[in-house]
Length: 132
Image 1 (cartoon, rainbow, N blue to C red):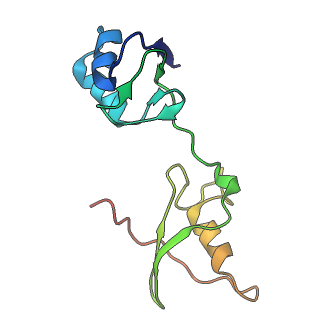
Image 2 (cartoon, rainbow, N blue to C red; image 1 turned 90 degrees about the horizontal axis):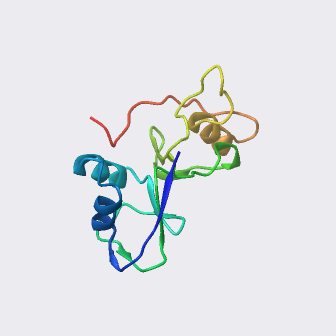
């Protein structure tokens, strides 16, 4: 559930959040801002110094909306050679299928994207480059 606040005077976003969420710890406020659950006039932001004007609507605790995975037809290929393919997987999209979701995951989308003459390529997920 989200909370909405109307800005009365010009301020920076973090200062405004400290003011209206005075019962929250500063650490919790900063975590919310960093996790993109804060929106100003419907646009998500993580910028602590985002300038606010009187009349702006600040919403806290709002989930960031992602493209629905079933809308994805292709994935951005960052690198490809005969042995390796690196993709940019959107947040919220499963890497591989589960019992509940076996059609709309990165591996299935990439297989469909690379299928030629009804022959699906042999793809095996190996490693995330953004994690140790």
